[in-house]
Image 1 (spheres, protein in one colour):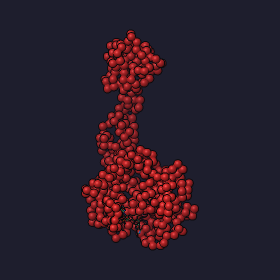
Image 2: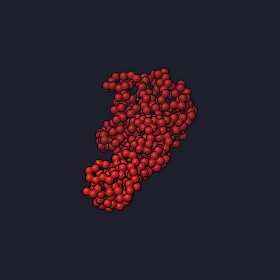
Image 3: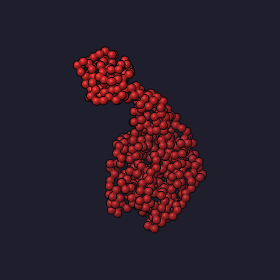
Image 4: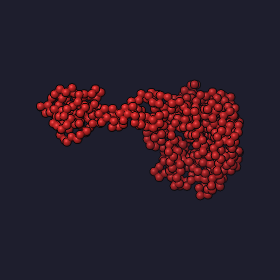
Length: 518
Ligand SMILES: Nc1nc2c(c(=O)[nH]1)N[C@H]1C(S)=C(S)[C@@H](COP(=O)(O)OP(=O)(O)OC[C@H]3O[C@@H](n4cnc5c(N)ncnc54)[C@H](O)[C@@H]3O)O[C@H]1N2
Ligand code: MOO
């Protein structure tokens, strides 16, 4: 690990903490007013107005030249929408050199199909060996077997209050836990405490001082709270309100019986699950290990610090991906920066021991775009080669001969986010044994223009009356997504105001996701 890599790790940890803190709020606190985010002068124009127009001129040629001037006529409004072109189904089993998935760069796999292929490829991966881990290390993993109670809970009849255990009707003769009559202060001090062994049975007409959490003596019929009873000089206890049999006694097995299933296999181990498991008698849990991921950031033009200069730009993906991935419950083993060198990339890909290698950049057909040549040389099977989604259409999913996976994210930063959510997230969820969050739809507040044939993923922010699409959503821009709390899935042809659209939550806004525990 280089000094730079170590520095990046530090930044990532800090961002992971920010993510965790933000997960506590339903929506991120920093989300600006969408009116501001969407309508601040002409710079806030949807950049897709330009880039989609180019794409619409040559919608079937992801890698062709885009030299036609932009025209507003090329955009497709929802009203004018015709039935979207049916892209081919997901390819599977092609190789990087050809085959059903590899060949059709002109269309690519439909967005929903690409996600399904990624998920099923993760599920089909050789099952990661579940193993027992101490409770302290199980947070954020997934149960590989149901959590069954190892004991009754509570495991004995327990006093729910500080007070007096009594048997039968009162008044009661006060005694010590051992059965000796007692009065005055001595009676107050001689009670049954939590953590003490079983005391002698309490005969009818007797009372003994008892603490919250202590074992109720056999034959006791109720517990009376200290504030609801008084003792007299003769060593008797008097209730100051009616006593209901069983009151303030937590009876053994009230919460569960030994062997009773408490949670199903596949449940995420949250802090509450750790507490329940400990209460139910567990020292260790059988869990699916977190998938491991190695991130390879490609590009000779990337700087890791300071201002962009002389054609160099800052690496936006190195600082973003590892913490984002950690919110998905994975173990990011390293983020490495690799120049535009094919041999280095080949070595890094084929020597990685991670379950998933994620590359950034180099997916297109430029002179130093080495992802496809390396996958060919590594004899990888291309499961998804291009997706009909904007941004991000050159994304790629491959399975290496070792059975490990590679996701190639396009270099444009928002395109990389699109690839992350389209391919990496469903794959990693499946590898981790985690269920996908239930899909949900929300009305769109403002119209979003569509691509004629491709799905669009557009950063949005939730408001009471629906989701508001944010501008600055071009493939190279992170300004929109940084202010967003979700990505709206815009079907080919676009969506009108009020139309329901699918929304993908960002992990730091989905507090039920479990992603904040990493
Ligand atoms: N002739 C064509 N060229 C391109 C097409 C096309 O269809 N025909 N598609 C464009 C689209 S869409 C995308 S997306 C990109 C994908 O390119 P690559 O995956 O090969 O990525 P690069 O060329 O390496 O980089 C693209 C862009 O992103 C910047 N970049 C790369 N890495 C980072 C990073 N870590 N942080 C910030 N920015 C990064 C890079 O400097 C480039 O500007 O291809 C288009 N080209
Ligand atoms: O539009 Mo590219 O697909 O920049 O992602």
